[in-house]
Image (cartoon, rainbow, N blue to C red; front, top):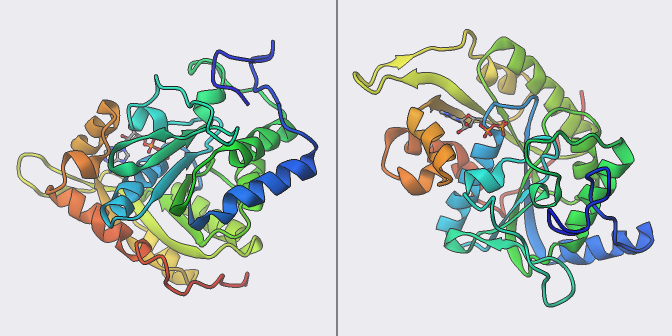
Length: 294
Ligand code: ADP
């Protein structure tokens, strides 16, 4: 795999530079062995704030003094480089022949599939196996060094791509499911939880993002989307509800400016909501068990 603009095939895809698949698997296992914890961030659909939660979770973990990696494998909408304003940087080869992640603030190491994709305004039209091998190669080649925790911004939904990620990282601590309050989004959360259970992936909790709008003038919360079933659904399915994060124009602005919200507005009330929602995830040694499918 080579950074964007180098070694792309005529179809605009990644160059597959690895050996036999079993070699790749071994390489991947060796890489994963130096990562102590892995937390996946999932969502039933795109646009609910999954990447925003992943980026801010990485910051909250780094604030604890942990060695954090942030991996973006959202193949059709990789937005972590933009959210961290590293989209113009390119990963360099690492000392051991792999690829070195980009160094972000607070020592956070960042890798995104976006660095290896065709130009950002082109759609990725790859068949399933190609996507799977691109994700596998990214995991096998990225030289994270020793990490306390890797936060994975996974592809949305419950299809082949999140499945590939969950299968390629079989020892993940669990998944956080991000949703918005609309009934339609909540239905997708049910599917995401079922997906995790089918894969024995513990559900660390559900975060309801864009849950009401805090009026910048009067401070009152305005409900924007009908429904607020995230909490009821989490209870119903026996998984933790981690909290609600309101819509805040400052969150969107921080995303556009490439500065995670917790770094740019650390004292704002919505930052408190963010911190409260991710707080249970910061205890990496908590006992987590996969809830069996019912
Ligand atoms: P996803 O990863 O689910 O596709 P993103 O994290 O990329 O979603 O977020 C989509 C857009 O919504 C981004 O512009 C982001 O800045 C914005 N956003 C996310 N959460 C909030 C929030 N709580 N308030 C305001 N804007 C938000």
